[in-house]
Image (cartoon, rainbow, N blue to C red; front, side, top):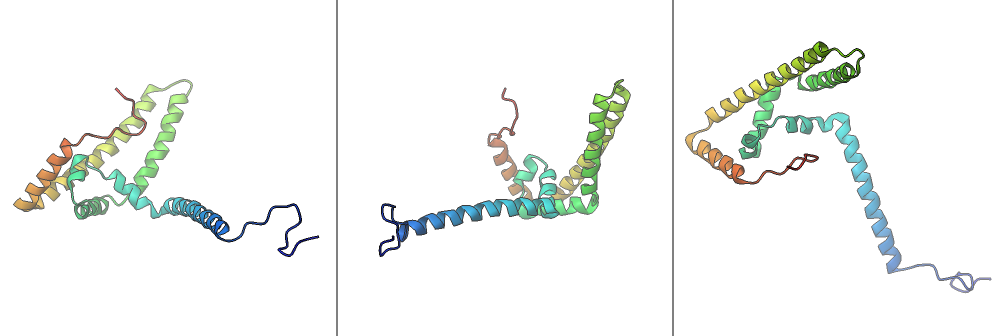
Length: 172
């Protein structure tokens, strides 16, 4: 039979009160954290993160680091206005990388095929770099003297900071 509290004789009492609330609270927090990670990953892969991905690609090294956030956004907008097919270019690059892999594995190996693929990739990269340099020069040329000096100061400060090694980079 059971006693007045509803527990079987000889079995421990069920957890009640504060301890149970703590366990439930921690469980809820962990579930929400996991759900947040899953939803965040889903949103990122649904294209909402594509703008951030493009933003990471539109970097001009220390120059970008020396810009104020609004200036970085304006430069990125100018770049995308002149290169609206950037997303298509990344798709094309992935397709070409598949062709590079096929060329590397081909029997017989064709060095001219690999050279042609790599030349096409280099041309696209060079074109994007030239556009970026032009936009960066245009940005700097529009700064008034005080803003240009502040930019130079931020650039110098950034140059003095030690660089963080890239993830996965070999250590010297």
